[in-house]
Structure formats: structure tokens, C-alpha cells
Length: 116
Length: 110
Image (cartoon, rainbow over all chains, first blue to last red; front, side, top):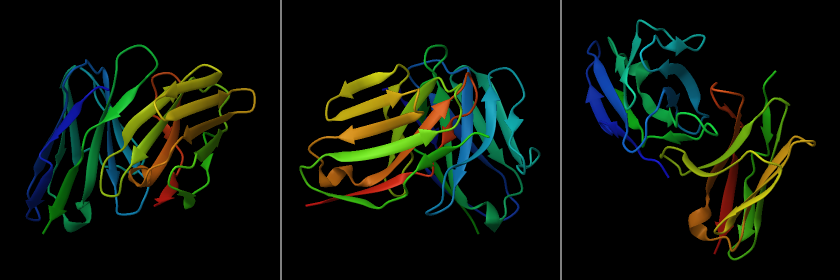
């Protein structure tokens, strides 16, 4: 299967600081990438859909000024959590969709964010 | 309304048995169907996808799709304790976000 990487895998930051998470498709081009968050023992929650070269589409209730998404190339999308607060602590997972075909979508390994 | 129904489980099967996971969906426009496996604390891993009616086999896994009945299933043959995880069913309509079920917890008992 296709490989998606995420960096960092784990980050601890202080309240009020910003954190950037990178998502890369390593062996395929991804015109569309997705960002999810997941709380312990809960379902995946879609935050936003990101298309290369255009603005991200955010799900209802997700603050676009707080969660900045940039999809600068066909293999890279970034999520920046700005002015992080303890309630932003979660597991953030990106996913990349192979261009064309059957809409196969692969997930990165996730980033565990802890805000102190 | 886009919905995917899955039995939340837990589904317990003995080691070596066949585990059968089922999913029904509401959108007749659904084009492709996916089964993901998610271990606790990890991200989902794509294990099968199917878009044509019938069966698709890959190793110990078989996905079955019946579009007329809006039903998709995953069979795991010779279940192993390492198969114990949450299995997520999902579908897609065009280049839109996946619609996920809530997942079925599978427990394979040694």
C-alpha cells in the first residue's frame, strides 16, 4: 500500500504557542488530503479537506483561524494549531487520497499533541 | 443522509475461526467501499477496498459487496490474536470525504 508520513509523531507544547504538523505522501501524488482528530476511545472526526493549491474546506465547528491548513504541493500538507490550549490536546491524523482511480485513501501514523 | 451502520461489538471469535464483519450504508450513490483496521492508539490502516459487486480476496481477507442490498462485509479467515482491533467500514461518493461507520471491535481469543 501507499505510504503517508507525519511529523512529528509526538509533541508537547505550552499553552499559547503554535505547533505545525507535516503530512507527506511518500510514493504517490495526493490532490486531496484530509485532517482528522481523535480523542481516546472516540471516533475519527474530520476537521478539514485540503486540495492542492486551493483553500481548505473546514467542517462545521472547526475554527479555520485556529487550525491553519496549507496544501502547497501534491505530496505535502501542513496543519498548524495556533495559540494552542489544553483542550486542543488530541491525536491528529492526516490522510491522503491517491489521485484518480477508486479514491483509495491512506492514513499517516498520527501526531499526538499534548498542550500543557 | 449519509450513514454507515456497523455493529459496535465486541465480536469475539476463537483463534483459527472466521470472523465476519458487516456494514450497511444508506447512499445508493456510493462508489467505493473501504475496510480499515485500527489498533488502539494507532491510526487506521487500509486493508481492503472494493467497488464492484461480488467478492474480492486478499490473503486471509475477503470483502463482499452487494450494492442492491447496500451491504458490504469483511471476512477474516484463520483469525489470529493479532487481528484483534477495531474495524472501520467506509464509503465514498466521488472525491468527497469518506463516510465512516463507528467501527466494530473484534477480539480473537487464543
